[in-house]
Image (cartoon, rainbow, N blue to C red; front, side):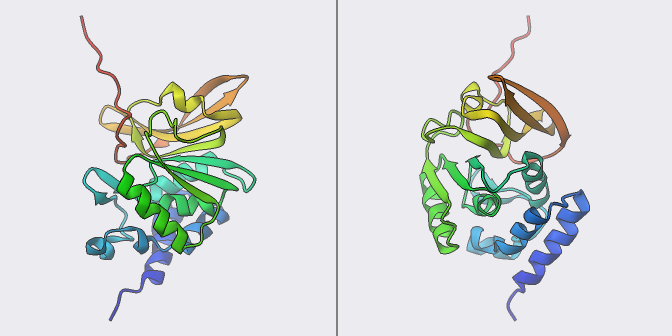
Length: 218
């Protein structure tokens, strides 16, 4: 007997998202609609709906559903907005965002993952997503500016180049590592200046290129 992925998807939404205060109907519907099993390595397909990160290639992970869903909820994405996703991996997170935004630019530094994400999204007919290969920390490969930037992994520090990609009134949602803990923050650009606030404690696997510079003690 094969695995009942639809039942597992419903269980994920009810047991992992609703129980962590993800209540937005559009977000819940997106997680119910997107087949997470299509975005994990075949050898790990039985793990697709566990409440944990799943390694997709060495050092890169499909984020655990709950903290990613809470980050999406924090960003308050609307259907008329453009979103830049940093670190799309195999495209699952981009597929979720495609259900919420007008246009999604999915940036990925690993060429193999970028091609796989593109193939996966075409199979789902997610026509409002453009996968772009390039460096994650400065997003130079992603043209233009965006209403929302969402980082699909934790970072040591957000680069000024990413803040520069925000439109006036735009938001950036991310998880920042602070020692052994992680915190989700929402940054907003107003009057050309960016300010941030703490949102909730969170844990996500780190993305490459966002390491905090070493601090020297004298």
